[in-house]
Image (cartoon, rainbow over all chains, first blue to last red; front, top):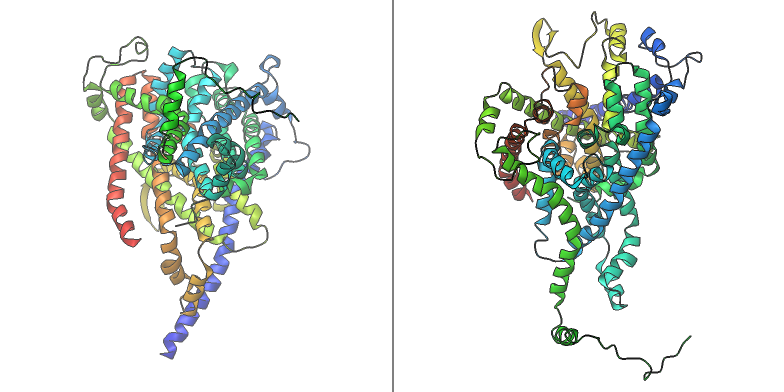
Length: 296
Length: 340
């Protein structure tokens, strides 16, 4: 009896020690796989290609090798012999911001309706939205391409933004809805008593209260739109002037005379806006995404 | 401030006749609250519904039609909705070389990535559960692979794994004495000798799965950590008092608490990965034994301009996915209901 108890104690102590140490090993491993690839990207983007070929395993860049010519080549307009990424950044910004505005415009009333109002078919709506994700995007692409061609929207940034709205609106509604259900109904009743119509209530009472969630949702949508690749490839590939940064970078990689370090500079240019935004609002975003997930 | 005498205020008289009785009718029979809610609800959802209808539902229906017709990209513009029906596309899909192997590849890719990303996310969430110095930064940094653009990170992997100038092969040579550089992304099968036993592994496929795990474990991490922090401390303390070891506490106390969120993540990730296109396309282009179904559909579309065959292939995939999900919910849905 006592011996088995002692054995259990020692097992407990052994496990505590073991997992105490294993925890730090895991943490070190996580830092290695999450931070190092991005450091590697940054590192390669500031060295000339010869330095990379000479010593592929180098973990830093020496002062004499350091260069920003890669960035110059990527950002300079195509007329000056560069890759014209400044223009592409502008395209990407237009599409993503447009997508965010349109998505929120559609998702706010939708999320409000689903969280607050009992209406015909309200419970089936989510099933319909699941269809958005159940079918491969490659499948949607063909009919969309033909439809948009008929409407004159193919190979235009507006058409692309509309597709992005459809792709992001379900998740935006989901995130907003999870936040809206936490706003007490009595606040709305008070607004109604004060003579607000329903639209006024949404605009003057609900929206200000839901601002954190709105920002988180908007940011998430912005990231999806900024990072999207497939539809940009299918819709815009023929028109270099309208490429987004993601597409431009992928096409850059197909070019023969582009060195890998220039490619990495392009990757940094593509990544930085998203990562900066993300770090600025990380708390907001993670809470917005997982709200509702912590209740079983 | 203006004062308005009651006599000066004109009664709102509608100029045209018919509006008057209608207004009175409305006044006589006010809408009930539930009907008002119904109307407002429908009005509020309509923008979303419209977008999803036009950009998702209609294209899907059209794809179903296309799958049963001979349709090439050039003549699709002028084609009517109803053409000559035929099952040729499906026959072509099922007969074509590599369909079944592609389906198998997709399944391995999807299952491996889903399981791997959730497992790694779980381990990460457990490791970062208790506070330590730099935890806030690390928690944010952990999400980097998920938020960074797929095109950028795919190129970083491509360069890092390159046999000529990649850092991985260089350090593999220095640390582990690899004789030949390994072409991770273009080797279909790689012979490994372990304890004298030689067997082949589909290296490119495994690399792509590793990429997928790397990119999506933060997603699982985020959700599992949120759930983990909502577990009341009392539960674990009680288990400790009862003499439970850490593994026992995890197995019998934490895991049951996490099961619902893990189940949800499995379904979500499975659907998303099954339809995933960008990652594989950017890393390998679907070569070297990584021809997952979504890339195949894309090839049908862009290399052969065969819209009908692409649609049929995509339809078969969607049906396969639905069958898998149906099976999942049949077996696990009941079980979860029993538990709750």
